[in-house]
Amino acid sequence: MVGLAFKIAAVPFHIWVPDVYQGTSMPITAYLSVASKAAGFIVLIRAMDTFMYSQVTAGPCVLLVSVLAALTLIIGNFSAINQTNLKRLLAYSSIAHAGFLIMAIPAMDKNIASTIQGPSAVESISFYLAGYLLMSMLCFLIMTIIRVSSDSENIDSLNGLASRSPFLAFSMTVGIASLAGVPLTVGFLGKFMVFNVAIQHAMSTGYWFVVVFAVLGATAGFYYYFKVIKSIYFNAPQTEDSESLDLNSLSKFIIMSLVALVLILGLFPDLIMRFL
Image 1 (cartoon, rainbow, N blue to C red):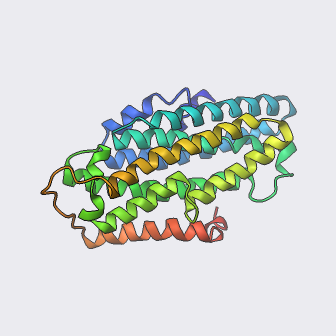
Image 2 (image 1 turned 120 degrees about the vertical axis):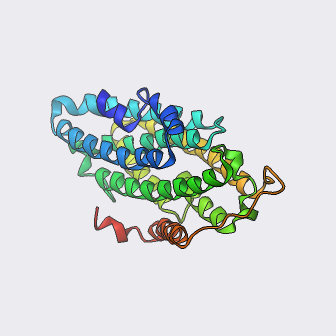
């Protein structure tokens, strides 16, 4: 569990994430945020599934994972609030999203799994991971473009983006809103699914502290995510001669495709659920 927690950046094994995200190039950061985390959770689900079958290990595993989820949710979300570097903010955001994913794992307990109404714990985690891949790639792609033009990775590099490139401003807003869990996005449905299984599990076991910490974490998330949106629309550009951003056709196509998927899957989740 320690090894897997390190892999998925769960607290208290998360210390490496902010420095690594900030210190590496943008494509490597995106890879660690999306592909590496998805692989870690796939292995975690398969490993935990074995322990959830046994009456001897199911109870201790549920308690262990619940505490891990609670710590990850609180520390990940609240540590992101004071970040000024956008990559570090998304690093702590990645830790927080790991917490939301972990809180669905206790519902894999075989004594409870059969009573879950709606998508199962594994289906909920799979959908959340698929949605997280889309919205993270959208944000990191736009950040790469901003990084090249402004030579900065701070949040204030997005100042006045709405006037410099309305298209990028709208696309970044969709990605950030989805990460925050705003309705009509895939991020909202992902959070809804994991909350659904976590609440039903808490009704059976009494582990309500995980749900409470998740609500507190989600509330903090709205604050620091919308700090980014504020920079895009309400802050003036850093310099008066800030140039407008021109995109090539391939970048526009990829960004438009990601935006469309984030919004479409937020309305029609069955389009991807059947493949998970």
